[in-house]
Length: 441
Image (tube, rainbow, N blue to C red; front, side, top):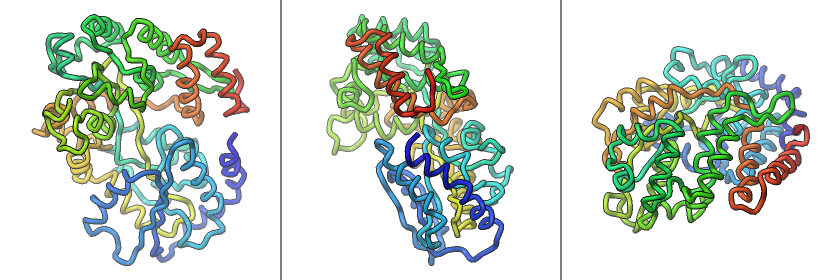
């Protein structure tokens, strides 16, 4: 167990008295709002859809505590600050902090996060349009909702139209979806893509989230590692794709993976949610990075979206209220505006590209004349909407991030041919028990 996590656990019983007392006592709102985050994403949503709308009290100062998320740095910083929270003056305490799906459960069953219904005041009627899985992942063992999100992050398959025409004879999303609606059909198209001189996927990690998000049991049960058949399917498929030349042998986030989407790229498609389209592929597609994002600049506009073989989600950012905050009413207004108001959810989707966490808002956009220029003018919200309604998050565990990262790390040498599968498993179990000594093989 990480030292920071141990600190969280050790201080929990001391902090719960302060947190409960604070939330039940009426007091004047603070004049400083401290928000911990790892990038500008929430800051942009907060500024564009809350501050500029005149909703932030003029006498409140907002301080951003921003630390990069790589290598657990943000979590470690957050853990240390939350442990110290009870000893800090009001204006130094964290009021809001952001968490990602991969490690959200680490903070859900602790007294460091407030109940957004009981303590902050959001009502079930206000929350009812949010996708159930986005609430399930932030619900603690007592049924308390500990965070809310403006995003839902269903994923699908984002593919090159020109390559789809070359391989399948058509680039229409409905036609392509029929060809990719199961893993068996997906494998068949991968074979055809290879024969036509293309790669079905960029590399080893591209499909991992589709498989890991479709497990039917937690990856850890009674402190014992429980590898799902879905994960085993990812391993066998990825080995097959690598050996047969169906992927480009690239690691996710590598320059080689990005190049696969660019002007010289030969990758059929990538699995991802809305943020992957707007913040990864759109930039990677450009021949002239400083040029206008429009059709003709690289592969921009030569893309489309379909549901793919399995619904899945990837990512998401949740807003948590920190116990000890002196701004509960302001936090209520922020959470309500940025995660519950339908008109704001529609505006964020149209202006910022997020698939937002409101079923009616997404239904309205799905049936509108909305067009995504990167996707050649496609309104891709409907297939996203269909996948979002199928997502379940009842198998999550606090160990998911570490296990997922170690699986991808330790099996890369197997895919590359440097290890046997047995050696890769030994490598994985060695690494994971160092990270989580309490777990058993």
